[in-house]
Image 1 (cartoon, one colour):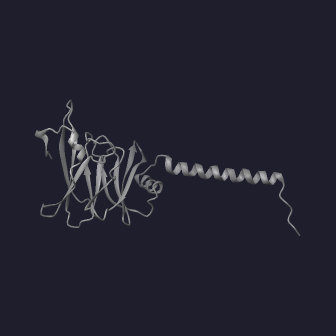
Image 2 (tube, helix red, strand yellow; image 1 turned 60 degrees about the vertical axis):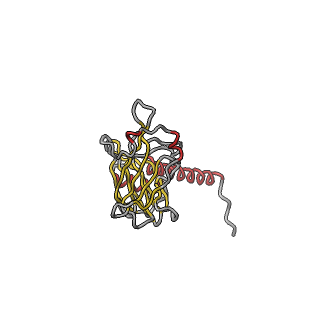
Image 3 (cartoon, helix red, strand yellow; image 1 turned 90 degrees about the vertical axis):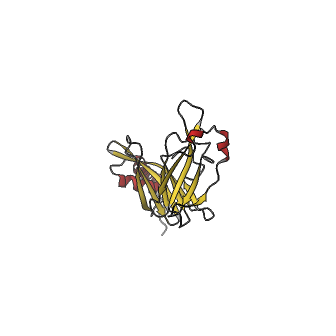
Length: 218
């Protein structure tokens, strides 16, 4: 015997029920990914979910170099992929921040994360090494001089934070050049301190008046 067709009232109830479940699901997602969190562990979980980096593990942590900030920076790894992300603290709560990921470039000893092309500078530049003999990485960049049209060269050098990842602090006066395509150069040194890799000097640096007295400053 054929089942009777549902009445219009039943259909309306089902539509309303489904619509309610959909709105509830959207509200749950909004709470999970937009609301502040009570702990950094919750914010880290949300950061991984938001950028589809589930299953990744923490390689290293770093505090914001600004003493006025309680923000935290984390290096994550998932297989051959690495990521640098931020967790922002506001009073008692935590929020997810920005996120950049990259793989080691097989044809380059050093690969920057965020990759060149990021929209703006960050407090840290993460560099991945595909050359096991590299023990230290040096970042060279141009920094603006207050009340001057000149810029100066600055360098910062660090050992690996963990697992072939180098985390180099970047100051606020970093001269960020139209998407950072040519904003810096990298050098790699072995355990004995010998230079084994150096990226080319950016061509755009020729457009700047570099102060001779500050050239090569560390």
